Length: 273
Image (tube, rainbow, N blue to C red):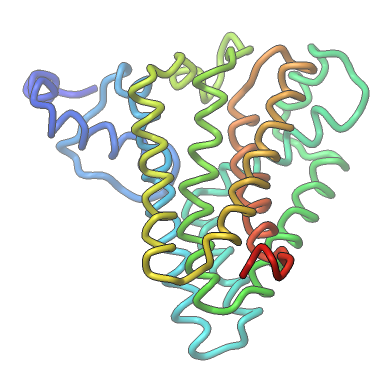
């Protein structure tokens, strides 16, 4: 719990926003945060605006690992090391959520049984196969990109996929009485959602301006990521009546992978030209 001085200092807008960012960083990564940040339960409800900004950090780390590794090893190995670094950095938080969703929604079970399965720490057949195939597709897609395109794709996909996950918080209901994501489950304000969207859009703008990837490929990648997130959201509403923390991880993982696939799509000459 934050000390009185820390709590009073949140009245200063800049310090308050910085604290919210560090709380989000602590929640979603293994990175240590400064001791002066402290903690207050309300900050967890407000830090969702910085989820895509945490994606910047993950993108920078994975891109740096890729950039260094590709100097010494093959692109395939560089992609594998980069992905492993991202999984370590986030504690496999999102991958675990995707696997749990595969287990819970893979079979034809009741809502209550699906939620029970998703809460179980053990992985079943659907979870193992699902996360295995997702990682394989992600690795294959990144390996098929040129080195500079890999850097651009990582820089866009990580913030974008985390913003798409916040769409569930913004629009859907949290369906568990308790859970890891319960403190985050308050509906986002419109301003918070728009700020989160800004962190997702900025890398896209920079990538287009710098010329690391064509806007057409980025557009297809964003479209596929949005479609993937929307499809999952509809399934969550139909099967669960809302979302859980695992659902947030599933949206992040699937939309990230969908962006990589979109960036690889071969566009018709008339569209590219």
